[in-house]
Image (cartoon, rainbow, N blue to C red; front, side, top):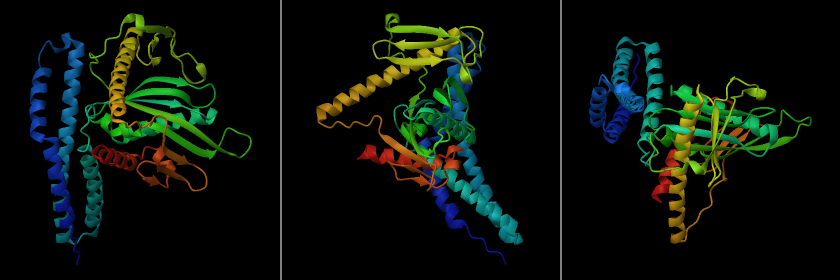
Length: 369
């Protein structure tokens, strides 16, 4: 006779789920959704497209968050029913399904619990990720493209909307740089732990000799700021260049000069946008990203000054944070958290949740020290 007892495991998940609901504050979510739904229903909302976009985006994010939390509660209820049926009918197939659902729910609830650790000023915002190739020639530009695909596949797994804003292709393999947006609640708080220098070690597919090649790529993550009004940029501080959008191999993909490159002269920060249809749209998108970067730079400088006054300066920019070994041992290892995977192919295919969860917990412990 089949005796499937998952009651202790389900009870443990319910306790964690209850804590998560309190932290997320489901009632406030419902209240926000009601208010935003009312605003979204105003007939003349789209007379102001910028405001309409903010309202509908905020509503969508909150509806998604509530649906996810409520969906977990329903799945826990269904799991208990499934266990009961499996025992009542002596159905081994239902028992296998129940164990698989328990495993899936455990993973989902653990991920949601990690989200409750994100309480930074910008953690709940969407994210803009920029990847730049570093030292290593063709291997580095190829590695940068591998990282871009890795994050796009990760977002796809979670059904997060992604918008590629700019891609600069290398003359040989891969990309010199790419910028893309992940539009999801807490995207910044989640993927910000991926920022830093990534290292790839492998037998180069681009050299004639079978020698190990080490290459680097930098990952930058900033929050998507709806309005960066705290930063005013004089026109005299910006150089604007327009050019035609290009694809792999330098091939032109547009017959007009619609792509825009903004250079902030005082800091040297450069932002390029080429994926919108018009020059005006690309310039507006580039300006928003530039304002965000300047705002974050301002905050970083303030934080660095405080550390200097306290006598504690830590130079962390450029520090290697993760290594990818594609020869011999086949390993991906995070040097901050110690988390590792012996399946680099899966990692490059978007299996990043373990690394991200470990990074968020590591960051929380670090902040509390």
